[in-house]
Length: 140
Length: 140
DNA sequence: CTGTATCCGGTAAGATACTG
DNA sequence: CAGTATCTTACCGGATACAG
Image (cartoon, rainbow over all chains, first blue to last red; front, side, top):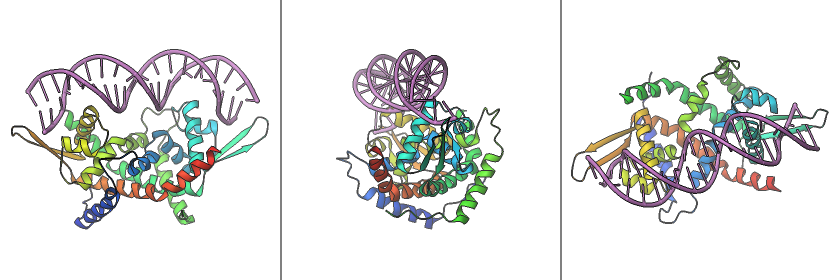
C-alpha cells in the first residue's frame, strides 16, 4: 500500500484554506458552527449509499432502492429520500398508475455532489488496506 | 448560488468509476460491502472535526483539543483519538513530565486525508446556501 | 494533566403490521 | 407498490467522579 506524499505546497495550501474556514469562528460564543452544519450534509451512511446507487442506476423505484441499498429499513429509506429530495439532491417522480409507480433519480445538483463523493470513495478504497493493517497492528 | 454544471464527460467518467466500484458486488450474498467499510472512515462527525483542527493547529494537547472541538466529551474525544491513532491518521506523543504532557498531531497519512476532507468541506460550504434554500421551500 | 470508569437518558434505527 | 404508524431495542453520547 502506497501512501502518496503530501507536498509542502499542498500543506501550505491546506493551511490557507483552513485559516479561511476557521478564521471567523469565535470559540467563546458559538451557537452555530458553519463547518458542522456543512459536514452534516455528507456524513450520513445511508444517504451516501443512496446517492451512489442512484449514480450507478440512473433511475430506481422505492423497492428497487431498498434491495440495492442492502439492510436499509422502510422507515430510514423513506426518511432519507424525503430529506435528499428536500435538499435538492434527488428528484421524485410519481406516476399515478395502479399500482402506483414512483421513480427516483439524481438532480444536476445531485450529480455535482456525486462527483465529490466518488473522489472520496476512491481515496478511501485506495487506502482501505493501509488502515485495516494499522488497525490490526494497533490491537497488539 | 451558482451550481456548476456537470459535463457529459464528467458523468461518463463517474459512471465508469461507479461501475468499477459496483462491479464486484454480489447482492444475493454480501456479508461485507467494501464501500460501506470505506465510508465508515469518513462519516463520523467528531473524527472529522478533530482532523480539521489538527490540520489547522499542527500540535494540540488533549485539553486544548477539548476546547477547540466544541462540545465533545472526555469519553468521546478519548475514544476517537485512540481510533484515529490506531488507524494511522494521528500520532500521539507522551512526555513523561509531571504533570504528564501528551501531544497529538497528524501523520503523513492524516495529511493526505485532510486534503480530501478540505475539498469536501469547501464543496459543502459553497453549496450550503443552495441546500438551505431548497430545504426552506420544501417545507411549504 | 490526561485520561478511564460508570451510569444514565435520548435518539436513531430495525421489525412488523397496516393503509391508500 | 410505496410508503406510514407504532413499538422496541440498541447504541451513542453526555455528565460526573476519580485514578495514574
